[in-house]
Length: 315
Image (cartoon, rainbow, N blue to C red; front, side):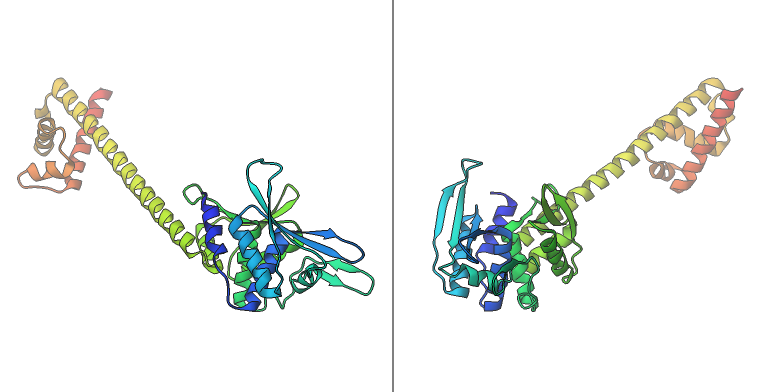
C-alpha cells in the first residue's frame, strides 16, 4: 500500500462531532469526486465515485449524519484498469440530491432555472475547524502525497480553476505557500517543501502519516550528514596523502641531487623524519622533534623544502 493510500485510510477514519465540520468535509468530497446528472426539468441526481472503500464508507456516514439520507454504495469494476473496483454513491432528486447540492453551495436555484457555482460559501468554512475539515475532504476526494523516501510533494487535483484558487486561499490562511499549475485539463494545487507538507498533514489530522514522514526526514538528514562527513574526511585524507607523497618525492630528489646536508639544520631534521615516517601526520611529525613544534611549524618547514626542491629543478 502506498504512503498516499495509508494517509487516506487514516483520514477516512476521522469523523468530526461538529455538524458544521461534517458539512464542510462532505462539501469538499462532493466537489472533488462528485458528478451531476440531469434527471428532468430542474432536477439533478448526485453521483459520488471513489476507488477507496474507506472513503466510500465515510461519504455514506457523512450523508447519513448531516442529511439523514440513507443511500447505497454500489460496487462496479473500473472500466479502464479492469482490476480496481469503483464505489458509487447515488443520491437521486427524489432522495434529496438537490437539497445536498444547495447546502454545500454547488447549486443555486432560481424561479425557472438553476446555476452551478465553484465558489465555496463563506458559511461553510467560516471557522478554522471547518477549514481543516474542508481541506481533509479535498485531500480524500482528489489529493495525493508522494512517498517521502523519494520526494516531498502533496497535491490536490481539481476540475476548475475557480475551485483551485479557493483551495489555495484556504491553505494560505494556515501560512501554507501553495502553487497552481494546469495539467491535462485539470488544475493542480501543490506543495513541494517538506515542512509545508508536514504542516498540512497536521492541519487535516493525518498525525500517523506526519510522524512517519518526519521519521523518514530524520533518516534522510542523518544519511546526508554522514555522507557529507565521509566525503569531507575522504577529501582531507586524499589531500594529506598527496601532500605527503609530494614532500617525500622532493626530499628524495634533494637527497639524490645535492644531499640533505645542503639543507638548513631545521629543514634537514624534518626531512629525515618525513622519510622515516612517511605515514605520519604533520602533528605527529611535530611531536617527534626536540623541542616539539606545532602543525603549522612543520607545514612551514616542509613548504621551505618544496621551494628548495623547485630551485634545484630550475637549475
